[in-house]
Image (cartoon, rainbow, N blue to C red; front, side, top):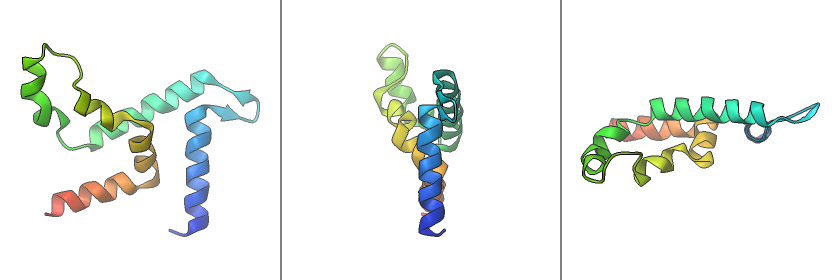
Length: 94
């Protein structure tokens, strides 16, 4: 991937994450894109629940702090740029 296409994808991600369009900022569009990205990241990250499942039961349920780190803007950006998929492939190959 060339630097120009990477820059374009990064700019596109920022624009979509913030809900910017020609007509101005759109918070609904931003929320939809963020949910879309978080859902895709949730499906890609291998077995988050199996790693923290025991701790979750002991602490009374809910989302554990370790799980929240996968749904940050940084992880969503990595997914959008294809970096997260590369990291997962490398981790699975060991």
